[in-house]
Amino acid sequence: MSLEDPDKSATSVEVDALAASEFSLAEGLVYLNHAAVAPWPQRTAHAVAAFARENADVGARHYPRWLQKEQELRSQAAKLLNASGEDIAFTKNTSEGLSIVAYGFPWRSGDNVVVPRDEFPS
Image 1 (cartoon, rainbow, N blue to C red):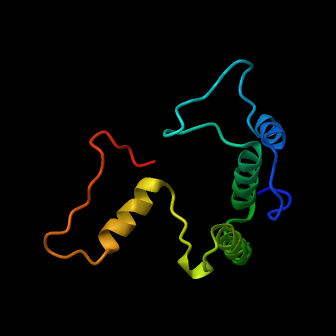
Image 2 (image 1 turned 135 degrees about the vertical axis):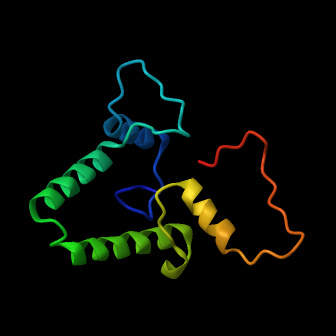
């Protein structure tokens, strides 16, 4: 899937070029600790900065637009995952998502959750 055209497959060269443009890591640096707080893609950093500026300037004045953007993202995720938008939930991280599932699942007496001993859920 290409970011520009969701119906087109990206080549490895295109993926490498996109990664190079999105992650401005120091020359020769390889970031392997992906389960922690990792470097942000440039488009994410710019979007968060723009949101923070807007919120500082006008507060929640554009809240309806934020909700619209959330629905657009939900629709995109649903298309990507071949799911219904109603089945898509956004959480702040994997740990929170797993907790929501664990606490919301209709467990019965004797049910168990099996995870690796050294698992870190992200």
